[in-house]
Length: 268
Image 1 (cartoon, rainbow, N blue to C red):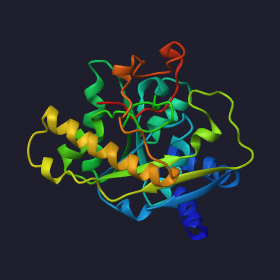
Image 2: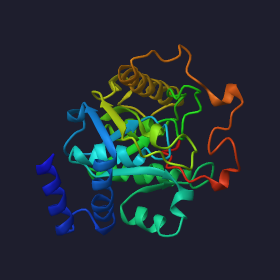
Image 3: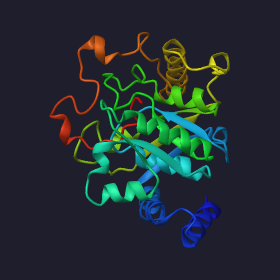
């Protein structure tokens, strides 16, 4: 870890990460190391080079920070797909754009721009991070809910590896849609990556709606299995579906949507 820290400082000094991402590394890494504990498994499954999609569950507005830390410590610069509203926040939006993060214009005619940008990033050899549910899970137990097809579409279009990662712990720092972080005592950030999702039977042709749904179900299933290992518990037998439950699919279900500021890797 000490060697990696020295390499990070060197990379920032050389400007190899860009000023914005370098700012995030220097500004966030040390506080994270001091204020959280880490239990990381499976980092070797994240390719050290070449385009890939890393897909995870979403349990807190805080989780992009420790998750980005996990991905970066594996030697990759994460390119998150985040909802466009975050990019409109003064200063924050400028940093995100300069750091190469990708805005998602949900429920608009511009939604396909995020897909095109993500595909281009993968083809440049970058590591794109997608929240498979498209928003913080609505499941009462914070298990992964029914997924969106964006990650599957990127993976099937590019043929890149799709790496599932389960995370647990950020919700102890900041509850879903909470506004008061609980930093002490130090919370445990658990990340567990698995081998690439097997999409081989669905590749080699234009992704159909059925293929996208099947690929998405496989991705969510792999993430759920990893989360079961972390939590030492079994997920509900039926995956939570906001549509059938009559729950808002995006944004904070408890207040007007325009005030939300979460980082969502939304459906594309």
